[in-house]
Image 1: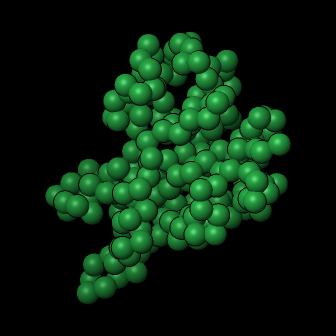
Image 2: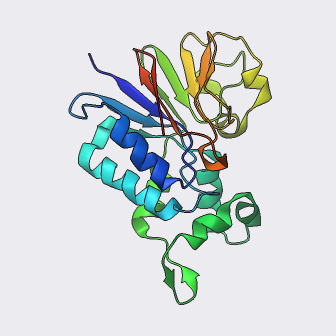
Length: 209
């Protein structure tokens, strides 16, 4: 049976990502991995995290699904317009410091910029909806606003609304995975001293690093 391994917010924590990948019993000739976004910012190794993800994408192609998080959105905005300063104050300085320096400025490879542009806001299977932050209650997935997919918190988390499929999400950190009938939250605050979490589906097994 094909499995899906969903991985929560990494935030530049390369050591935890490498450790977690070693623990996941994935057969990548058959199984899939879905990364829920927020690969960069706050942690020390955003550059190397993106390099590792790009390597996985190169090796395993369509079996790797990469969602856009709000921090990738902010990073892209900063690359396009250096006046987008809020990126710097939400962990972005750590991201820029992790990049090689050319003529006194961080050198962001074209491959990273292309990766950021290609991130998808939501991914659906027959049984699950994968999204970075969550969904606005009462609205079909196809009509969700991009800003809600990236930023929503309490309105989604408090909701018992049934979107027809269980929602797997990150963005809001919990001490341990949030498990409810309509959703599962797997951001367990890796960059804040917590664990990096992976959820295996459909067997519903957790892996931590």
